[in-house]
Image (cartoon, rainbow, N blue to C red; front, side):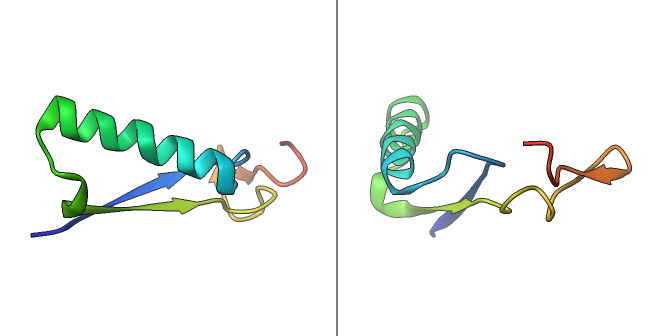
Length: 64
């Protein structure tokens, strides 16, 4: 069985940060939960400038 994890951020996701996050998440899953690195995928999502993320009756557009 494979698992999929989704990581979302309004800012800061890019190739360099995603590699760092992948390494940290992989370490936590392997060391903390005993899940082998080839048993899951990590998907990084950035909804852009905030227009695609709603909160408190509004969106984050122009606020981040």
